[in-house]
Length: 209
Length: 97
Image (tube, rainbow over all chains, first blue to last red; front, side, top):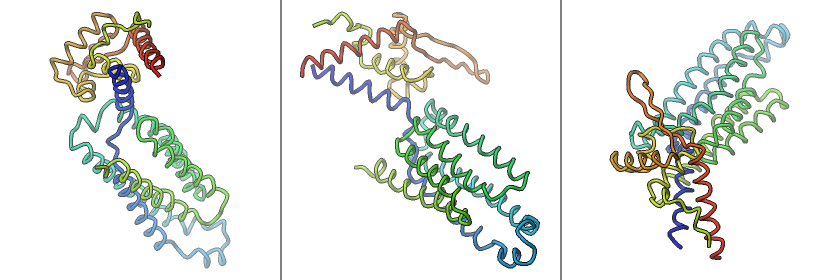
């Protein structure tokens, strides 16, 4: 009789293992979060003096002076994204023991596809907004689309990713209603939340035994 | 106790594993299955052949970048037999407790 129970447990284990990508490392989250925090700090310290400018010319002309700053932020954003992806891949590659087949398999492919769909949609929305000089809503939308992407992809990896996604999503929505703190919300979502969830996942799945 | 639904195709642990993995995936390659179930090439190939003989799985051969790529899928008959096998397993354990 024990044999049948073992069979059921084995079936369950294989189904779980074959549909979820479990080489995702918590340290990937920590490194991506740290990079996001550094980028946020750079963005904060290089911002132009807003107060003086509004006083002199009015809010509507802000985009002119802010043009250089926006260009700088776009470059900073792209570099941050690339570095975060590289560091994330590195720690996941390490956790997979450097084995290519373990890193790029049926479940990780599904993870990438499900993550990419909302993320690419969000990316195009952001590009559209940049072209039309609507900047104020971009950090919030990044959080919202990223949250949706994580929720969507969580079916292909650890359950914790679902809650991380939900947190990013809620944070983005809260940020929509609170003006003037976009960068702080962005830093909290992409920096602090990544680090907190990354450490939690690392302790839970990688430190055991 | 009804053991009619205990299909002999699933008596082996490796075959049970192959079916379990294919039930939750549209299609898996030979290498996906090998890595997942930690079986040797020969062992996996023989169990796949056995399941194919029962017509529980279907084989698709195609070329990606001129390299042969073989993927495996469950058939309708395979899914039905596996579900019945699972139900029978559950029934047995339920009757026990």
